[in-house]
Image (tube, one colour):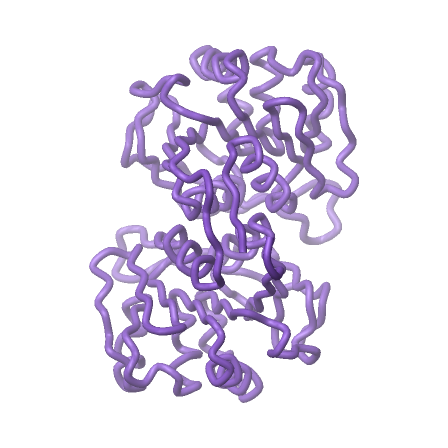
Length: 389
């Protein structure tokens, strides 16, 4: 197995939502320990996140994302314990770039010859730390002139998925490039991917939960799996709006806010279960209406009857129940979906804690997005995909 790897994730208030959570949970799913810290905050504290996306305007819009919970304390960091550093983008780097403790930390990672991966506006921190001089870099386009002024060799991102490697530094333009960004970082840490090339179908719908599509999808793409994301009555290139579900103010159930718009890359009418090695069903509100579509239910039955790996999370089990494929299966779901599972003939497994996931035969079920590391890891095991360091 090799030595376990440990990575530091440098967070701040209004870090971009996907930039922080996707690498965090993907790396955990691959068996990498990740400590998420923020200056002036402790383990268990919250960083609010921001959702940045282009919507036909001259610059990106911003809306409030999930709350991200830190799992380590900035003042207790020992650089010698880490193999690499990840710097997400968003608005956080604007103020982190003026924090001397942050800049000193980055310089220590560079002088120790450790791997650094930075994306979006994260490169503002690298520029302020004066560690990009002479290096090829890309970033979110507005960071261009700062990187040039800091002595970097700017690489224009002709697509927003561009990632650049120069020595121990990986830079990416936006979250569109997460699959390559994460894959390059894993390989830089000495990771090897086995079982790649699997074909996975994602069953999407309007107002599916934002994290529950983005994290598993990009985690699997980073492992060199081919992923098709489809939605009934929509075609490749069309979008599904997503929903941010979170617990924020002590309410008895989750809040909902608008998430990133998600772009489909395949057409529902052109796919069949026989084309794929596995199926993923995100949660959110989409499953409520997808469970009423006979074509969706037929598709799910085909995957289950052929014993192909299926992973369903949160409210996704509403579809599984409606398809009649939970009979005799032990599974969990978001607790409010317990009635669907029980009436659908499944044996209910209480998700205590909420991030617990279960595998029964070819079926992986999870309760909510905090369980993504287990959810993705268990699905990888069914697919025969793994990362070794």
